[in-house]
Image 1 (tube, rainbow, N blue to C red):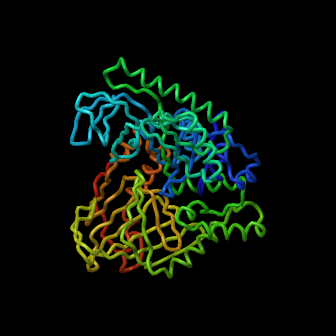
Image 2 (cartoon, rainbow, N blue to C red):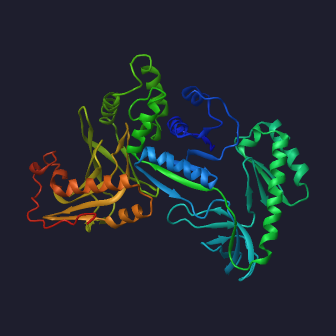
Image 3 (cartoon, rainbow, N blue to C red):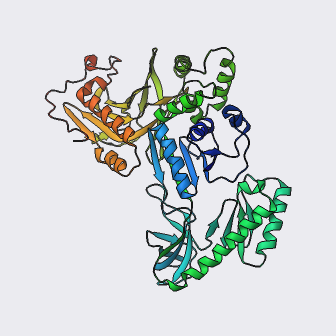
Length: 497
């Protein structure tokens, strides 16, 4: 049995997924217990699932085998997600060899990677036992090592070289801290080893804590003795799995449906909460629950109508472009030039004025201050379209392939799928960055379903590219907008050929 603790704005839906998959939920909130019909369980967790600072991500941390099974279960249900897995594991322990030294900084070879160790008094060629302090999770991150390595258990973690006691942020009660500190003092006084009490320790008995500390002390001593006979880099102990699941609008829609199975849930529930509208969502659901039959099905029309009426009068709309790495690019905001709403979709056209010179990525065209981008955003569509004009002259159109944009009263947000399409006068249509999408798919960052979704969108666009160009003079899309015909464009390469 795998024990999982779930926290954050996605907790109800994620908890339901995991319960249905046979996982045991521990330390569940009162609301979750009521919705799922489960009892309060204080068993120490094997895996924790929670939000990150980026509200479009789930962080999964725990013992490797158990955590990977949790990730697999969540991904199998949400499908349209990004996945990142840290390597090496957080808090894994290695015998490393110093291969470079620069002042008090060393580069240490741990076999499967090289990391930075600061401070470092050892010389080149020296052996050193290190723990992984910051693993590499996403591109551009550096592996950071520490000599204060941890031996992590279910309730406590021993810390080499730090003779202090620390507590999880969830342990706040003075009497609990005092009880745990007393146990630590009796077991570790004078050893030079510190201890960190994990959140689950507050529910444990004195005997359970003492037994785990004893067990970890024995393992700690074994680690120190085991490395004596080795000269080459060696992994000594597994650490914790650390992974992130990136939640696109399509995944959030699935979360809405899953949550609806146990609680009244309006359409766009998780999208709106991820954009900071938790209070509004809670208010709407509390008001509608006793009024409507069912659990919130078919409320999307009302939600979009509310957003439509609000966004028409917005002074500015903030635009968030989210890359597969989780990096959030905040584009220059736009003014609503046009908004249309029907039963199936909300369309807005934002007017954005360029403020500095440069080059339009993908188009290869000079950008000048004063140029205007007419940005077309449509819910339910796999693209956001940038139409660039200068003095009424069309410079080109850049079609960003992404999951359907999320729109609130003042925000447009979308998850980029890397592959894009550029259209330049008079007849050039190019597919951009197809290899980047392919690379992430092959590495398992992008799921098969998300990859196929992007490729399908590209094929639809290149079949009739001018249908996606906007002409501000006529305030229209499609070919009759007066944009030059493509003529004989030639063959546009298939993105997966």
